[in-house]
Length: 140
Image (cartoon, rainbow, N blue to C red):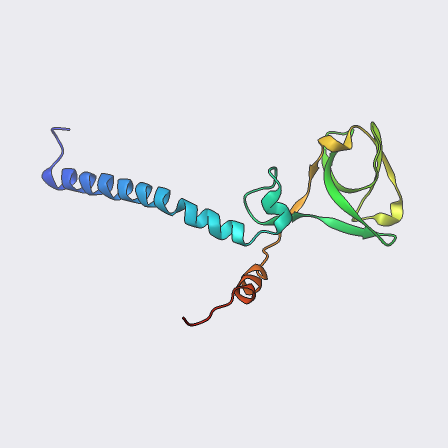
């Protein structure tokens, strides 16, 4: 430290003060960011404790007139694929490949409740107009 020039010490001190200030500012603004992110979520996602931080919904596909949730399914060869759960079973379930639904149902052995659902970003921009219209603004 003795070999540092006065200019280098001054620059290091400025860097420490700036980084400390940014850290404190980040802590201070975190609740506001959390509120903004939550304001863009659906009611279901806000109440779901396992939902990710960013606004998203479980991916759903249509197959033969019905809607099915898409899950990340491990296969026998070690890969993980995205399939839609059609028939729920305790230890055996049937899935459909969204990219090739003509192939028919795929039998899978395992507990479907342990699978991770595939989510896609879904910002609920309609929350803002809905909130604006539900509040009556009257002059006193």
